[in-house]
Image (cartoon, rainbow, N blue to C red; front, side, top):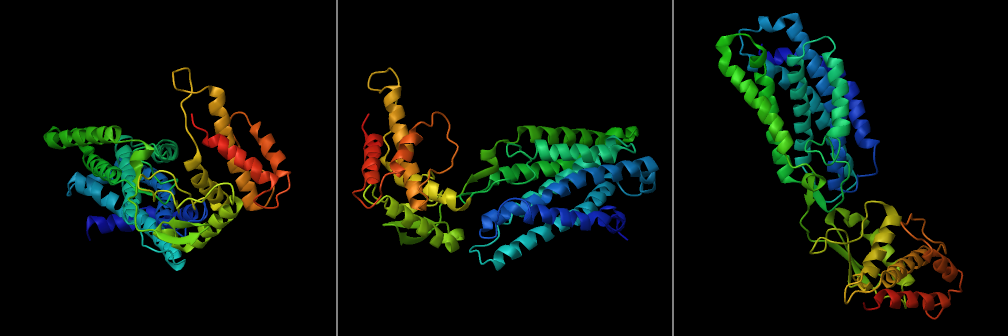
Length: 422
């Protein structure tokens, strides 16, 4: 029987596969908002399954590696080269843990396919999760070899939890365990994934050769040099790896959009959100009715990321309220005048610039209240002075009986003020 099959049949990971499957599935299906309507969001949500698996991988691998060294079992395997023994152990653990990860990912894909989402799975996210699990296993085996105590596994598990939830759990980390947030206009960076795979390969190599660093056999100078080289190379790779959120995710190239007329304009969404196009069109119609006689509709409403420069756009990712607000910004922003304030020649005073900014906020708040039919200001938390809201409440209390109402007249005044030249 091969070394891999021996390790596969005796690894303690096999007894933890079921509870880890339940924990990982809970992370995917019970944590965060709905994702079944979009393949990009599904792909990102599936990476959450890796979090409990990476924490378990560090602890289990460290315990197993340290236990084998303390028991002297390593000497019974002397017929095989040390790196073969280490790789067989890691491969056996990886098959069990990655199998759990793939089951959770497959379940998420089935749920999204059943929901009828257009497009298909994004496989690079599978590679993202698997590489994190293998890196965690290599780290655990490495730790167990260097620190063979009976408490190594528990210490490594606690350390792994802190490492992968507080350090690598951040989106600014080069070895982030999961993708916390995923909007429709971004996807996993190919550069980040390449660095991640290189770091994982180096970590596996360091794990397989670290025995040479602690072996007193002077005849194994080559193994000692390899262990030191790969250990240092792994550390350098992790430290040198690009480590900020913009490196983890990159802007997705615009694709042919799904479009439909609405609100006197054309509304366009990403192909994955074609099933939600009616929702966006309905919102555009409400905004068009609310802005009638105050602001003309834009030629086109685009979901975030569909504009040529990638800027602006409304979002369908955060519910109807956010959809309405971001679509309103698409209506009002082109009509705002942006001026430099200060004492330099040609710039205007701080007060004038502030009045123009508040006029824009007043128009948006009034339009949102009118579009929802609530007659109340939206309950956003605004920074700075909120005295401008008093005028909006006063205007909302006026009769609103058509394009010549007192509310419309007041809103036109705000529009003129936000459009005023510098």
